[in-house]
Structure formats: C-alpha cells, structure tokens
Figure 1 (spheres, rainbow, N blue to C red):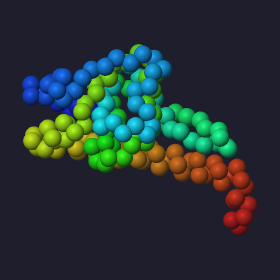
Figure 2 (cartoon, helix red, strand yellow):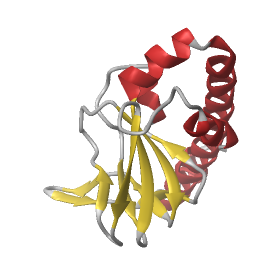
Figure 3 (cartoon, helix red, strand yellow):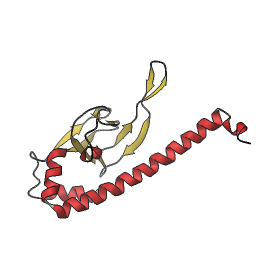
Figure 4 (cartoon, rainbow, N blue to C red):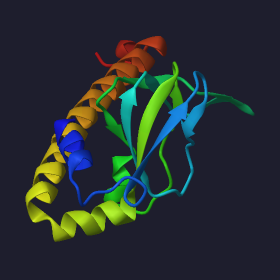
Length: 157
C-alpha cells in the first residue's frame, strides 16, 4: 500500500512516536484473535497468514488459513473503524519485518492532515471492499459445498 510508505516517510510521522519496526520469526504470532490492541500493521518484508478459529466438533477447534499477506500489505486496519477485539490471528510464515502503527495516534494524525488522511481512508476502503468480496465468494462456495454434502439439492425439485 503505497500510501503507507508515503506516510512513513513524512518527517512529522516519526518512528518511535507514531510507529515502530519489529521483527517476527517464522511461525510466530504477530497478533491474536480476541486481542484488544489498537495497532495497525504493515508487512514490510516476509509473509504472513491470517488464521480464523472455527469449531469443528465438541471441544475441537482448528485455525484454517484465510488469507496470505505479502510485503506491502496492511492488516489490523479495522481498529480504525471500531473498538472490537481482533477478528483473526496473524502468524508470520517466514522471518518478517512489520511496521506497528499506533492506531489512536494514527487517527489523530489523519484528522490533522486531511490530505493524506483522505488518501489513506480511500485506500483502506478499497482494500476492505476487495477483502469483503473475496470473503463473500468463500462463504458462497462453502455454502454450496455444505448444501451438496447434505444432498439438499434433492429436496429442491
């Protein structure tokens, strides 16, 4: 996301005040589902995977991969729009460098700097719409699979 790179280069958006860079080793957790942190993440190098937690039976849970992240992608951005806990876990697939941006400070900065604030919000909305469309396709595919697995189509004549 080029707008984040532009933001990180701004003299008044200082490292140590608004953001910090952190290294994560392969297979380490970057953020956990249910966390209440207010950090926005930007994957600088490496790769990461978004994991969902689903119940597959009594006392049986699994964490399937939902989406893979590549350098230049942002995640955890929903915290800019609500105060809900994290909806997914993100794990580094390989050694990765991640920019951790303080969400509260970012919001304040964007309010004071409308030009870049508008560009960033526009980019985030485009990203979230794209992710929603991808999620919808997966949900519809799973729904279709479930209906077929239970032979529901036999009852739709």
